[in-house]
Length: 147
Image (tube, rainbow, N blue to C red):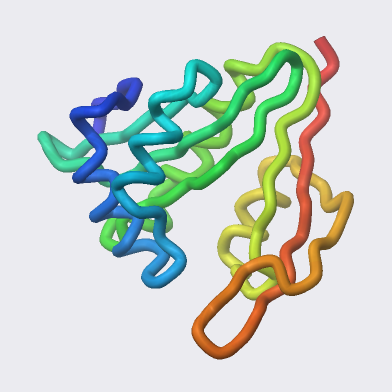
């Protein structure tokens, strides 16, 4: 669980599999991940246990703002501090400005992670996440860095 590195096109299939494991029907497709990683503004970083990816994030950085697009940890590796490591990695790469994200209201573990690392809620998106038979509200979180 020691190696972490920037992600690239060669990681797309493994990323899609991990994202599906983490998010089920809400997971990104291989095409969505590849499209995002192809953008100069997207930064992806993964954590590995030997050769297998166990955690990752994708973030969109434009100027002094970074949006966390997705963050996932393999279920077998949760509650070991990887989420906090990823958040700290993102914040360390943003010297000033704002880091922000959306999270489903019912994703209690993610909300605890963000609030526990200093993110604060600043907005709300009704019915933002679509699931089979329902729509789930999103909470907008941000972390302001003063450079």
